[in-house]
Amino acid sequence: GDLSADHDLYTKSGKLIDFLSSWDSEHLNLPQRVEQLWIDLYERSYIELDDVVAMQKWLEALITMGYKFPETKPRIRNVALMGQFNYADFPNSMKQIMIWSQKNRERFQTVVAAAPLNETQVDYLKAHRVGYLQAEKRKFKKRGRFGFYNPMSNLMRTLQRFANSSTIEAVLYAHDDALLNVTDLSGGNYPFPTDKILANRRQSESNNAEYVDLRTIPDREKARRLSHRVFPNGTLSDVDKTVFAKTPKELKEQIPNFHSNWGLWREPFCAGGQQQMAMDPEFANYLEPDGSAWFPYHTQSDFLMVPTKYAFEFAEAATLHLKHKIFIECAFGKIVDILQQKFEAPIRHVKLCTDWGKLRGTWKAIDVCKSEPVAVLHPFKIGDRFDEFWVVADAINFPLEKLNKTLGSIPV
Image (cartoon, rainbow, N blue to C red; front, side, top):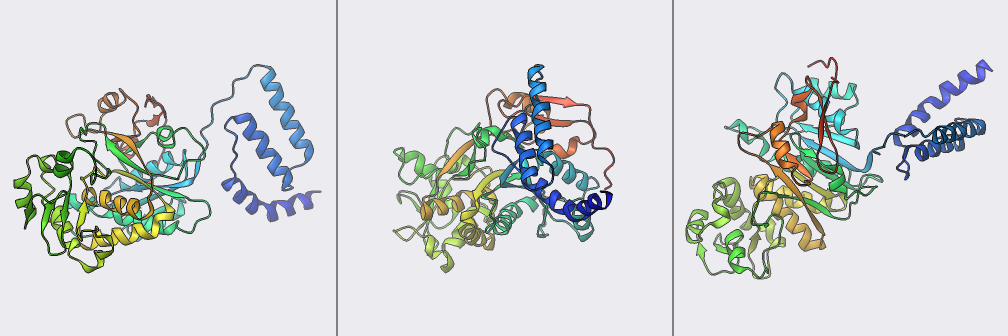
């Protein structure tokens, strides 16, 4: 008997661990999930029929007693979450990555921390079985521009990683300082719906133009003010081709409140790069029937979910934007537009609440944001709270509570 038990221990343990790691059930309440798991274990000869019957009687006794089973939050298995970390060279960088990964693994089976990691950091994450993507280490004169391009490159590479996966149907990119309202993002559905691109729309943005095709909207003044064209000879114009200019600065001066007077639009890493990209022969496949390149309104880019079936086309479009050094807030809108134009890819807008003022990153900012349901809250860096408390975001209206739990000792 002992010999037989030892044989099972050595021959079945690895397969059992693999099975439990990938196991899932369509049932959402705990008793049904437990029963399903025991049945699945029995069908694979890990337990006996008597074990299943005993478990069922145990559950029945608990129900008869009026026991209230805890609610379950099943892990999302068909969407990979990619977290963008702009830096990995601070003393607490590894702690931030670890707590972000552990917290988000509560809701997502596949979590990838994308950061400019060195080899020692990679070995550490491997040893702790933390999913990672070793981001490119770009050199910039201004350190704050590390996040201008890497999120786009990292999302592209993560989509390519899972393009042929039999289980991952979409990649959800979020900055490490974004809190995700999973129920709002999923619409309360399980498995997570992956038939649409999910794109954020700022709660405070009055134009409602982020990730919107403005080419044919009835409000032509709005369309001319918030989008533009560039021709292959470098000439810029408004979307209706009533105003023309040689430079972004000249176009902006001719159209009042152009791009909401957003100062970064006319920079080389936005309109300047778009002008160069429109002149690139490699962009010819994306030109409009009139021969121009149409560019949409800029968008805050701390979040985006893309189905893996668009991985190849996303990579082609992202590569062109990276080639011409167009940063994410001017790039993501056009890349999504390309997917929509080529595949009629459906899109669902989700609310993003953000704060750039004195409340940035504080609990007070969360209180302000949760006045109405939002899908993404920014910025609030979970990794910076490791020595204080866990952050628990209920999916409906972001009620948050502080728990007296800590991670314990995590080496830097």
